[in-house]
Length: 102
Image (cartoon, rainbow, N blue to C red):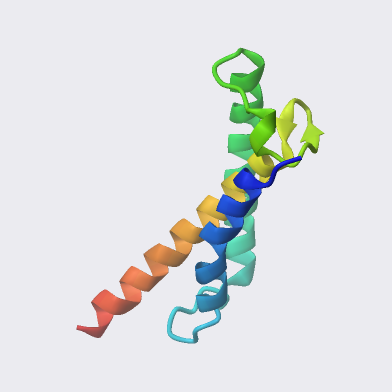
């Protein structure tokens, strides 16, 4: 059991998650829209990922994941899409705030 993939995800998520509480960013103001967006994006990409992995387009090295597999994908891969989507939305909202300030 290794944690490299999970560690990268947590490191990617840490700062945006902590900073998303800033009242100027207002990321949680539209909580329902945020969660719906994360769910839809994640679902679409999970299906795509499952199909691509099943067809042999890519695979996951068991030496870099914790070892929990669901439908041929490691748990970290299921976390990847909501984490990246959340961080992307956070960056977008942050840029909007800082551009609006000037």
